[in-house]
Image (cartoon, rainbow, N blue to C red; front, side, top):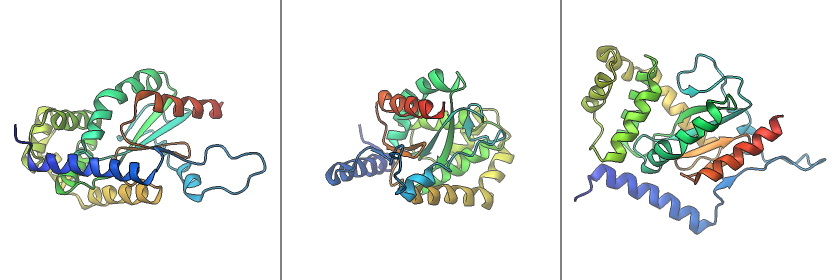
Length: 230
């Protein structure tokens, strides 16, 4: 079977990022952690990660209670196969264990860097969010990517919106709104300032987790953050 060009580019970009990290010896879990007593020298980037949680009760790009002890902030790209892997395997278990229990809140951030299709999808997901359906749209986009259902276009995104019962005309208007484009860019710029260089990437407290890591990587980081929050 021939792999579609756009999908092949996304796979190649993800593989290049992982190989580059391996070659450079960059750890997959980055952050200063809790500083030792009397240690005033703190990584300013790690310190800035502590300010990431939005905790806005009206935020359509979040799952879980605004006052949950721990926030997991994800930077993702809707054309990234590793993001799709995380979203369809690890994330549902994190939701079951932590979000549903009121312990963790998940907040989404865009990092649409794999090309024009990524940007189109990011705009569309936020247009779905304007109708309260971000997470349904998020799931549909990643399921389409996992199943290899082809390129993302304005028409394919409108079809997804239609299938979810959205007001398609409003969806199209919102997806073209310059404010949404600006919000997508701002998310990516924030991620870059915090050390995000590829996706999926996650901030838990002052730590940065890179990649679709196994479930224990996330549970270890979350459990440690819960302990610190007590």
